[in-house]
Image (cartoon, rainbow, N blue to C red):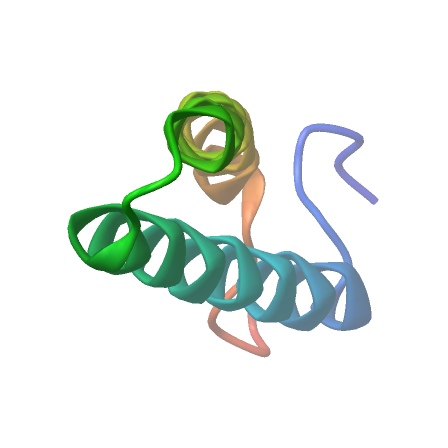
Length: 71
């Protein structure tokens, strides 16, 4: 088996984690506009930056994702 590709369950788990991080990013970004506490805003901005970094890291795994049974 090719070591560069992910197994089917790893592809599915990567997809689920990517979805979770995307939702977290959107929620933190939207809540920043509703928040008036500067400390909390700074914490949410840190979460946004960490989520962006995690999403970019997870996108690299999709190069090895298996989407077809015959691959």
